[in-house]
Structures are given as structure tokens and as C-alpha cells.
Image (cartoon, rainbow, N blue to C red):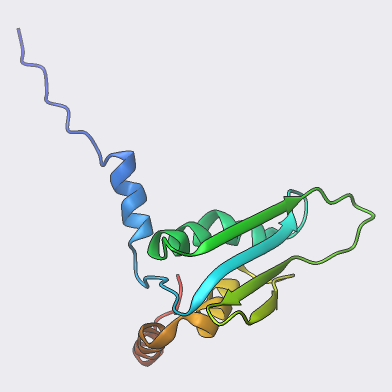
Length: 136
């Protein structure tokens, strides 16, 4: 009877998720108390919804102390409001970022430029000098 070939399992789901969360650049924010997002639950605000799905979990993983609030509201076709992100700093100042008609990577770049700190500026300068995209 021939031997049964050994099965080599692929990477586990946990290792794949951790690899995605830890990929460069690390999205650590400095001087922020919280982020609040308001967007449509479906059928609109595609870049903002993709930002919540892909980039916000990386930001949350890198900043466990950050207060993150996401409000996905129903939006009928006749309503006309834009998604927004309110960034609250440690000193109590608030900045509103319009995230309408933007790609998720441009939303991430804008947030990181606002509160990314020196580490983000160094990474951005290095990537631009090497001719690489800042965010994949």
C-alpha cells in the first residue's frame, strides 16, 4: 500500500490578519483623543466605507487607546449629505475632514498628514525618495 502524502497546511487565518495589521507603514497617530466617522450604510460613500473596512482596523490596532466611533446611517437616494470624519485632539480641538468622493488611501494620507507625527513624515519622505507609493 503506498504511503499517504503529507499535507502541508497554509498560513492560518490569524497569521494572515496579523500580517495585514502589521504591514508598513504602521499607522500610529500622535496627539489624538478620538475619531468619529459619519457615512452611509450602503449604496454611497464608497471610499469612506472602504476606509472603514481596510484602513481603520489598522489604525485601531496601532492605536489601542484611540476612541473610534463609526456611524453608518441609512441614506435614501433623495437625501444629499456628505460623509465626514471628525478628528478630536488631546487639547480638545476638533477638525472636520470631508471624505466625500475620495479613495480610502487618500483619506488615510490626509489623516496621517494631520496626526501621523515624525515617524509618518520620515516614512513618507523615504518612500517618495525611493519612488515608491506612500500607501499601497
